[in-house]
Structure formats: structure tokens, C-alpha cells
Image 1 (cartoon, rainbow over the protein chains, first blue to last red):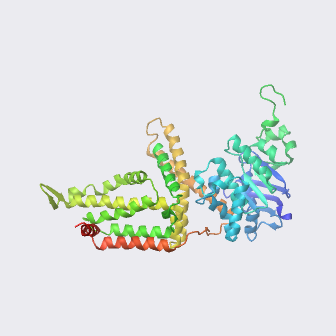
Image 2: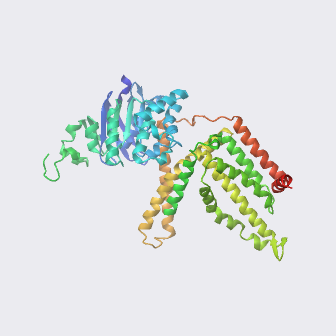
Image 3: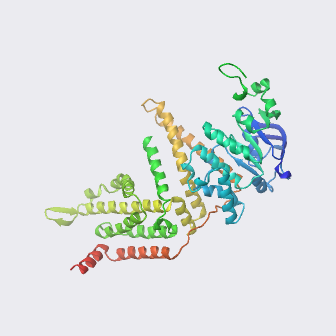
Length: 250
Length: 270
């Protein structure tokens, strides 16, 4: 199952205005891994994500998804393989109803209508949103929108699941629900987040970006113990690893 | 701000109504759109002094409201909302056109008064039927119907996006405007200048959002074509609906409908 691999080699990206957003990023994520990309605002997380499904083209360096190098010719196959959920679900949900939205990807893949129907229902069931299928997206709550946005990607049965700031803007209960859902996925998973407690629970491995470079890449638990690294990168230990605010006990 | 938010909620109500399941809702949208077009063309093609001949046309909206199970009060309120604009259009007619056409005892009804009334009735009919059409069909279905009847896909997609994002954009506009209001302390802020840059920012935001949406579409394999499940069929009831109503409208238009109805009734009850 080598098509679940993401490999980035010496990736550089310079924006048209001259900002150098990525400066020699290399990593390899293998099948079934759950990886967090963390870093301060402007560290290059979003830029890196946008490279993974070919929305941005590297200034130099190479990206391989599974067996394919990312080129114009392999773009359709790669966009199917890499399911990407954006931060603002309002950007992700653009069709008149939830059903149409979840069916958008499978229809574009050219699947027959029965198969589309099956995939839509499967995806909605997986996120617990079958009852929402005939609703227009703007009638949903933020948590429901997130779930449906995930379903729109699941319906394409991606090999690699990429999500930008999954828990952003969710209330504690919806956040819990979403994390439980993400935990169940067997895909290769890549998340960016500032919610480091979520990272601690969902991701075994963490990559720390700082000013467009990778400063650390390793076990999440080890990285979060490194106080110097975290403060250098404008980060902070997850709350669950800090002492009790009242008695100071770990 | 409450007014914008309120108007928005009302918009959403239209969508909820469109999810009804009456025999009118189930008709193929194309039949409803075409019948509405024939209706509107018939209504607006009358001369400016026509009044009585327009009245039978109320039959169609009333039928749709009754069988589409729509709340009458809501539809009437929506029509009243547009009344100020209509009044503005016709308000000077009675003053300009003072030729007396009908003498009711000592009171002379001028051409201006009649044309003013005619404008109001026509507006009520056309606006009313448009609102009714959206509430029994739903905006997306109307777009699809138009597309399937030959409107270029680009326009259909534009309309669909407009309908989807008008909510997001109005909410965003509302937030921006509230932020300005809160910091201008009841005054004018910095006047027109702020509104200039406010609008500019709004445009840029819209632009950025459009880019992100496009990104999300590309990520899901968009290649310029919208697919949808076609579950509507142009069958017997559609043909009956379309031709029945169209024939009636054209008959009303060609022969004075009021007179026709009158002579029909007096024929029955001499």
C-alpha cells in the first residue's frame, strides 16, 4: 500500500512578492501515520499544506504522493488521493444542499450515480450526519459544518487525509466529538493546529516548523517536553502537560 | 443591523418553504418556470390604462399559494416590502396625466390615477408570483431548470454561487459595519472616506474567499462542470399544468378576462 506515503524533499517556496515561506523542507510520512504540523503564525504551515495537493507549485524541490511525483499530469490522481479539509467550512461547502456537496467530489471522479449515492450515504454516516443531507449548508451549526466538510472529502475515499486547524472555533463538546471521529480514521493523517492538546491525543509524530524550516521532527511526547524548543518557536506546552494551576502538581 | 439580519432570516424561510412536499412542489421546476414566464409576459403586455382585465390573473398566485400550502401572510408581507419602490415609480402619474377618463358622479377619475393603480396591481402580480415560484421550487432548482432549458451554464453557476454566498457575505458585511458603528459613537465616523475603504476591504475579502472556494473545488476534482442528480421528469401533470395555465393566461390576455368571467357567471345566473 505504498500510495499512502507522502514524501517531501528539499522544498522551497517563494511567493511572488518575494516572501520566502518554505526554506528546504524535507520529510517522509508513511502509511497510517498520524502527524501534526505545528508552528507559530506565519511559520509556513498553510503554505506547506497547499503544496500537498498541488494548489501551489514548489519554487524548487520535489513532492511525491505514493508512487507519483507531483506534476501537472498526475494532479487529478493526487487530488483524489489527498483529501484536504480547509479551515473555514464555509469555503468547503458551496453546493445548495449537504447531499450535493458530499456528492460533488464523487461526481467529478466520474462515478455512476448509484455509486455516488452509496458513497455519499457512507460518508455522511461515518461522520454521523445522515439527517443533515437535505439541509442547505448555511442552516448548519459550526460543528455540523465541520463534520459535513469532512464527509465531502471522505466520499472520495482518499488515502491521505489532510486537515487545517480541525478544532478551530468548536465548542468543547463538538471538539471532543470531532477528535473521537478523527481518531477512528485509518488513513495517513496530517493536521495543522494550535490546539496542542488535540495534537497530543491524536498524533504520535509532530513536525515543528519555524520560519519556513523544520526545527524538529519526532515523537510528539518528546517534542512537547523540550521547553527551549517550544518557547523558541512561540509555542507552549499543552495544558494537559502543565501543572495544576491551583496546586502546581503535575 | 437588525434589519439586515432579519431580512436574511426571511430569506432562509423561503428555502424552508421550498422543502415542502405538495403536488405543486413535486412538479418539474421547468413547468413552473415556464408557466410563470407566460404569466409575467401576459401581465406586463397590457396597455397602461388597463385595470379590470388584470384582476383575473390573481387566480394563479392564489392557486399556487393554496395548493403549495404557503403561508399567505408571509407572501403578502414580502410583496408589501417592495411597495415603496412601486409607489416611487407611479406616484407622479396622477399629477402629470390629468385627463378625465371616467366620471363617477362629481368625481372624475383621471388617466394618471388609473395608470398608477395599474402599476401597483401589475407589481403585486409579478412580484407575488416570483416569490411564490421561489417558495414552491427553491432557488437552486430554478437555476437548474433554466440551465436545462438552454441558459448558458456559466450564468446558472453564477446564480447558484450568488445564492449560496449571499448569506455568508451579508453576515460578513454586517460584522464589518457593526465594528465601524461601535467605534464611531453615534456620529458619522469619518464619513464617506471610511465607507470607501470599508467597501474596498470587503471586495478584497470577497476576492480571497473566492480564491479559497476555488481551491476547495479543485481539491475535489472540479473540472468546470457541475453534476447533479436529476430526479425530475417532465410528465403528464407537468404538461397539464403548463398548457392549462398558459392557455388560460393567453385567453385572458386576448379577450378581457373580467368580461369573460362576468358573462360566464351571468350566463349561469341570468
